[in-house]
Image 1 (tube, rainbow, N blue to C red):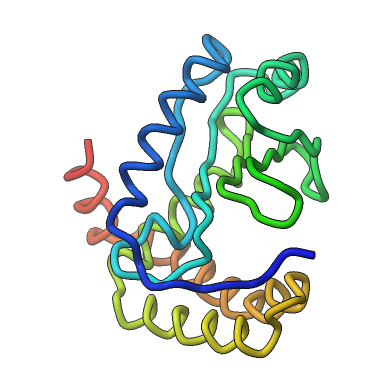
Image 2 (cartoon, one colour):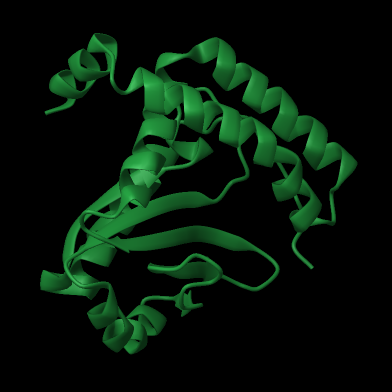
Length: 182
């Protein structure tokens, strides 16, 4: 059973992500277009479960399945779509304690934009990021041994932020932020 633990932000998380992105680039080769750091560990100052969430944009999601053995050799456990059509999900670590999650989507998938908007919105809206932190800490305290209840408890908040992020992503503020990242 996976323990739900939310810890203070760790400034080494971006470095850990970059190292893992390099490993994934070597493992997935030409099939990989880009790896993004997503989830709470990608938002500076945000408490999070100490699991590095990543999103891989790939050329062909079906071809990714043929790389499962390479992913296993790199320490990842493949789980296929794992409840989301068009995704390939992998985790690193044991069943009880994950260190990394990889969500792979084919380039052009709406899921890629949704995840990046959510991340960027929280980075640009620290008060809402802190509301999210409080919710996660409360849920982790309430459901320390029930990852499903923890995830379900975040669902409504995430959907609200997704909606606001979609509107925000059409604003000049978002375009200015993205232009500064290029």
